[in-house]
Image (cartoon, rainbow, N blue to C red; front, side, top):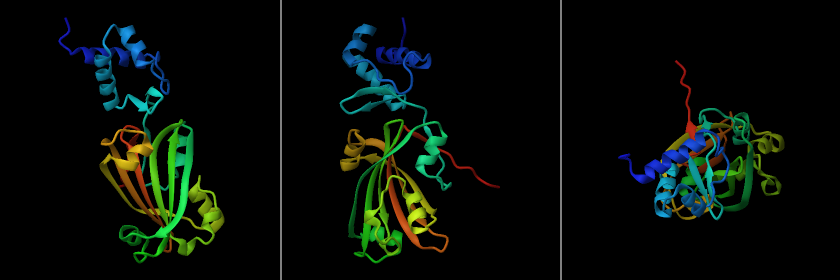
Length: 235
């Protein structure tokens, strides 16, 4: 008789189905009732097993749609100036951007410091959601410096750096990047479709031109189980 708790035994049986391809990446798990009946267990035990697999990044929940098998993690290299669309596509995934809105508003002290402005000066706030293979992976708020971007409100924002290059002849490079473990709460958790308190990553990025003009301050909130951070050092 196994000394493992029942939920861990069930977790192993589900993992076996995933590894063999019976439950391929991106597919939806059967309904909880169907799974519980199929394994001859209670829904309480099943939910413990599912929670364990979720904590390991093997499956994820989508609000009102059920449980899904996670795709391999994205590899994210913060020190390279490659767009989300490009590095997702290069890893064989399908990127998508959903623009939530653009608004002009006074800069907070944090945003003003990031963009070398005075607090209260006008800035543009752009909000977006980013997807890989139709899975939402992070939400972002981008603060843009209107000094260099006349008529910005009339542009499209699915591919921001491409638009800045083609419309404004601005080439950006990320100069300051921070990555901080965080708990996803409030509106961020709601936008990502997870429970408040779920672990995540908070990434900030200040981008400027070769001449030192600060154009963009980006705040990103990532789900914890969708990427691996890789940094290549140079000797």
